[in-house]
Amino acid sequence: MLDTVTLLTFGAMGILLCFYGFRMFRFSMALAGFFMGMQLGGILNSLFLLEKIPESARNMWDFFFPIGLGLLLAILSYAIYQKALFFISMFFTWYTLMKISLLYIIKTQNNLQLFISLSTDSVAKLTDGSDSAQTLISDEQMSKVMSWIPGSTDGEKLLAICLIALIIGILVGIFICLIQAPAIKIITAVIGADLLRDVFLGAMGLLYTWDGLPSFLLPVVKQGLFNGWVSFFIWAALIGSGITVQIKAGND
Image 1 (cartoon, helix red, strand yellow):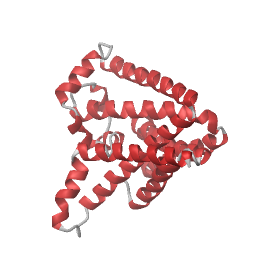
Image 2 (cartoon, helix red, strand yellow):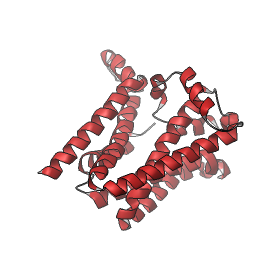
Image 3 (cartoon, helix red, strand yellow):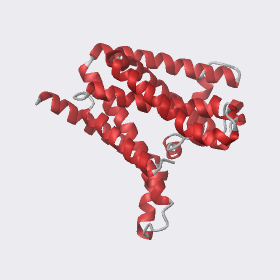
Image 4 (cartoon, one colour):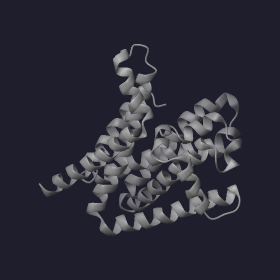
């Protein structure tokens, strides 16, 4: 769950990316690089690194490693911002597809027993802020999708998902680089909207655990936190608003 400082930071980043991504293109690439670095750091920690760190240093590593990786990618993205557009678009597409897959793979516990070795905390971090999305597709539908994925073992299916997501990510990255200005407005609006949706879910989570929350607001907060359609429509509305604002600003 995101804390208040992180919510405010991600909120500011999301607004800049969603509504001013093209106008502040180079800075936007740095912000997107930081966000991608933090997400990649979280994935690496959850899947590979954290269990190898001495228990006394795990909390510190878990906090500083994603931030450090985020800062590194932010600096790199700012320095090579034109080339960074391809890599950020590719990674964001791959990350989004993998997160959706992992959400249903892990949370429904119907597929890929490979993840049983992960701790509860690792599973929670991999799918943080996405629990409510389960309502968008049923377990039965997801099982059908998984049956189409090549591979006879859990590991083969996971590798196939990873490769398919990577190929789609590469195609998206090439497409965005070819189109340039319109695509930059779209991808920055989408990444910004994704950040703002995480902020929304994080805020709902903080309110849900707040002892001083008025009782009449509890049903509203529950809907925001647990109803996947609410966060989906907020995400879609933010994308539409961000693209509209950026296109209008470019025409002025």
